[in-house]
Length: 111
Length: 114
Image (tube, rainbow over all chains, first blue to last red; front, top):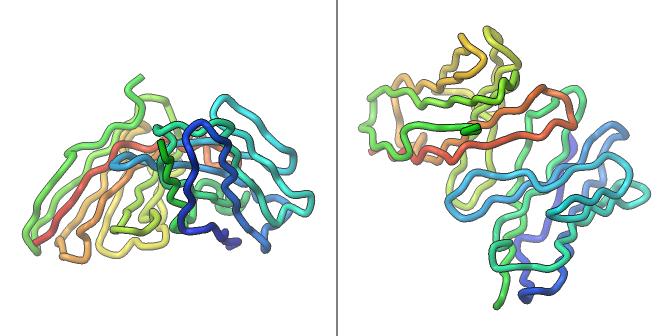
């Protein structure tokens, strides 16, 4: 299964944009890229997902490299509530929603 | 909708005891799964189900049993608890099992095995 690589931790100032990187150099052509986040003492929650094109929703944007070997989750204006562990996950048609969670990136938002 | 609910929120067991972690969803989702999360780690898949009557093993199935008799419920059974099963357990559901589906996670059950 294709795996992802993320920095262990990042910091951001409140109200500034945050770019969370993810490398997935062994991604296949049919793998979806998902981002979930986990707030302290809560279950993971969906943030965004995409296949080939960049995606936007009310929470974030997902920028996917042209060769799809990396992607970036963009939080346009970080708030204290965005402090969480962010997971970049690949899903393949053969395995569907059997997610492999790495250790993710722990985001600290500085007031 | 209540979404995905899990009971209990916290449980303490002695080694060798058995228990069932409950998971229910009211979104008519076909796909349900169980994960465990150890301190400082990401979630690992224990078992999953693609519909009532169908279950399969995930990455770390040993020591756990599941069954799926209804669409709504997906209980996880520990037959003989061990300290290594001390963890936080999350249940998740999604409409289907396609690669692009969104999963919804419950709030978790914290289990301590002494």
